[in-house]
Amino acid sequence: MRIAYAVFEGMLVTSFSNAFELMFAARMKALSERNTSASKIELIKVGAQSDRIQLSSGLSIVPDMELDDSRFDMVFVPALWRNPKPYVRKNKEFVTWLRAQWEKGAIINATGTGVCFIAESGLLDNKVATTHWHYFDAFARDYPEVELKRQHFITGAGKLFCAASINAQTDLVLHHVHRFLGKSVSEHLSRHFSHEVRQPYDQLSFDQEKENAHPDETILQAQLYIQNNLHQSGLNLETLADLSGMSERNFSRRFKRATGITTLQYLQEQRIKEAKDLLKNSDVSIGDVAFRVGYQDVSYFVSQFRQRVGVAPGKWRATVRAKLFS
Image 1 (cartoon, rainbow, N blue to C red):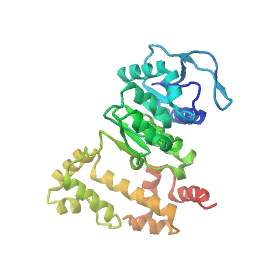
Image 2 (image 1 turned 120 degrees about the horizontal axis):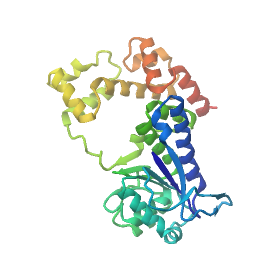
Image 3 (image 1 turned 180 degrees about the vertical axis):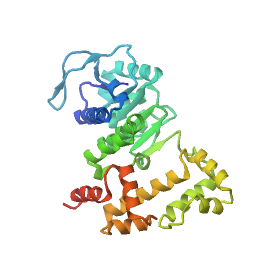
Image 4 (image 1 turned 60 degrees about the horizontal axis):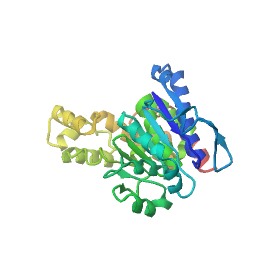
């Protein structure tokens, strides 16, 4: 996987370095787990010229290569200082290059006002996007064909992703890490990069393709029932199938077709999610947490939590709360 990081005068350095170092750390972690995919990841700084670029902050950076016809699998566009218009006008070649990369199949990610580069290319016309809150009105005026989602920190429209801020960018990068390098790597990064403020990608994002992609009302009701009754130890496939008026076999097939995962996987995910919330925001014991989310065997709860989160519940709580309440 070849990942390009666009660099140009006027960019906000942290919006470049954050995405770069997160992916670098992901690659190193994946290599330590003997993930062969990681050895093929290249992180490349791409500029309009190969000369050293003097940035607004006083720092400087040297691109690894110039814009050319090379194909990348993923591209990151940084945020810009102040009004983005002058920088977009000054870097029209980036706009053309971005569109060409998208046409070759690249996933394009932009942060804050850097979203203007994608919008300028026309790729976001009739698609969802978000940007830095201060430029909402100006963005809406400049790009009326784009469906601006002011209430969302992250948007996805096919291969086009927008992050409103650097914090949102972190969640977006972790989402990609999860997709391409696996859950264990993304969980590791989440724990080591201020995981106490990380939020699930699905809670922050608006995905144009996935929104309304699950129209099965019966399964939606079953999901709602699960979320509201996690504490019940008898919450299982038999109960859910019976409540839905279906055989277990038919319910299982329909549930997986609608959600993409099995009923048991969904149930376990919801229980761990609720457990994390209790561990983070209450003082109840590990045993009580287990019982409250439907586990009768505390040892089994601990093993399931460690399997999905990477550490035992007690250690996870200590790490989170140490920063939350210090």
